[in-house]
Length: 224
Image (cartoon, rainbow, N blue to C red; front, side, top):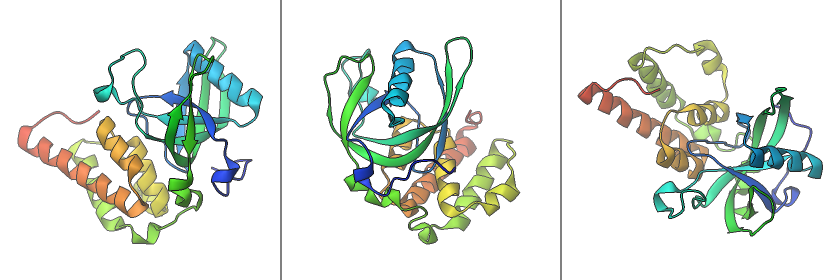
């Protein structure tokens, strides 16, 4: 999706960002994530992001396993910042918005703040390649990705727009499948932290093959 701002590198982004901890949510560069915002603290976060003009929100998973505080869980060290590219008001106090991913980030520190939402100082430089669209996509084994996708759809009696899938560039294909995948938080985090698109595709294929093998051997119901 075209956006009105141009981000050529880490210097074009702010170092302190509001973060939205959400288990199972995976945002990747140039991917689109729809969000239904209804909690007061996150409504305030959206309002502030718009008022301050940066329109940025950092999506990050809570690290529930290693947290001692269920009300304020620890965060994984890696997330992805997105720009609010669509916003709608529902009339009942909610926002329906879409984030477009820009770059992954590493959390440097979580700040003590007066806002009801959490904020972190982050570093984008470890992921400088995220600013280059379609980087490394020629190294992706597209046939393997399409093979496991086809197997997954058949195993779960699902249909997809196969013509659209075959037309999608490798980056869009791999990232969209990773974001939509029904896997758990550890798998989503592994997909996020993959060093490059080729590795992300390999992780996606491997995780899908494991799930398909489980289904064949245990007869478990389809993933939802």
